[in-house]
Image (cartoon, rainbow, N blue to C red; front, side):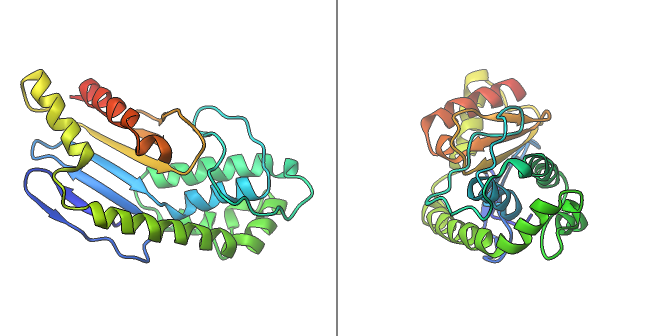
Amino acid sequence: MVGPTYCHRQKIMFVAAADEPGVSVRFAGTESWSLSIDQWDELLECVLWFRAAERIEVPVGGSVTGPPDVAPVPRPSLASGEGLVEGWLWWWRSALATSAGPPDLAELTRLGPPDFDGLAGYPALRDVASARWTEAQAWQSARKRAGIDVFLAARGRGPGREGAAVAAVEAEIGHKAAPFSARIIVLPVHDRQIRSVGQSTFLVPERVHVSSAYDDWLRGLVRALA
């Protein structure tokens, strides 16, 4: 995923394209630590939009976050989202695995438009996804444009929160951080919990990401890794 790239303690480069599916901010430390901040991922956010729009009630836990933060909530196209639950859970977990791993264009294509081949085993959800993808995409694109505007306005003000967190922990422990790598995926959800997916990927609710609670959590993460 192409995005703005920060080289900690060296220089700052912005390489994001406005039409990319998401933005990834990578803080690369000179001693080989890295924190990748992935935000505005099109597939993940559109899958969340369908959960909200079709009133798909799924159990929260593990990699399944609290309800999507979509306002206003679109009208559902079906009388009930109950028949979409199993398919949506498969779609979410598959999309998350794809977004959290190395770039895989074939898998992204399988999970998304135009054919949604990955949803062949869930025909009701596949029909809804095909019919309403442009709505979901329009919502996500507007969010991304607004978010990038804010990001660009704030860019260039020091090493950023992630780089500052590492520097603060290094000052506490009295030495440079040991090599580590972690990925943080920021999501528009009504949730206060930061969820781990595997050992080095974390799902952070957008509202937590903009709060001081994120900074406290981030310093704790760096302490544990460094």
